[in-house]
Length: 115
Image (cartoon, rainbow, N blue to C red):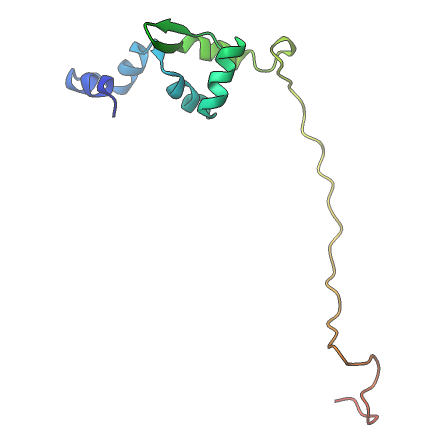
């Protein structure tokens, strides 16, 4: 639990109030929100795909920038593509090979009788 969460609980704010108060998040929090890795988040920030601000030596991502990024993911100018999944073609069923005992010959057993 972060210090901000503890502070909000002590003030009696419920979760929706806490979330509505959050304007900036760390790149790590932004990455968790988008379900991507920390390295990819920093790459998106460096490439300018996601806006960020510097406060002292800290980097923060505006929550609005995350919402903008997600809403523009499917637009071609952001490098995103919206594509349909290819149709699924059913595979023919696989029949297992007949069991063959090493050293056994096909046909009747030696001795002329089937066992």
